[in-house]
View 1 (cartoon, one colour):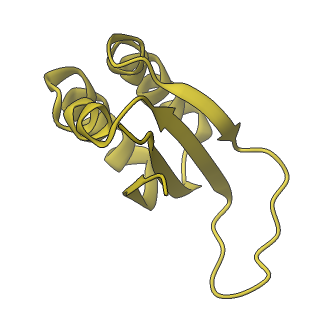
View 2: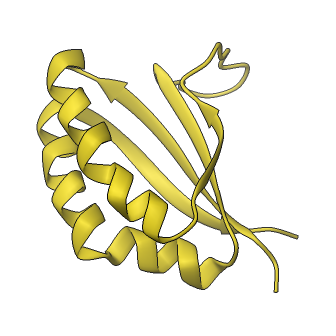
Length: 95
């Protein structure tokens, strides 16, 4: 079964408020075995519109990645994130 990844591109509007999202999302990520491959480090948009924060999270499967996103824990965290940041998340299955 191939792995899957969340690819998130985010502009944080309120860094202090965003910390609440990070704390709230942690239980969902732990429950579904998420592994952070990239988290907000140096980035350069070489084509298209970039965002301030880029995150890549690895999961054991597409099903795990999808279940994490739809979990009650993550949905609670998402409601916090949307107050303090704008962005998008896609779930991608590995080749």
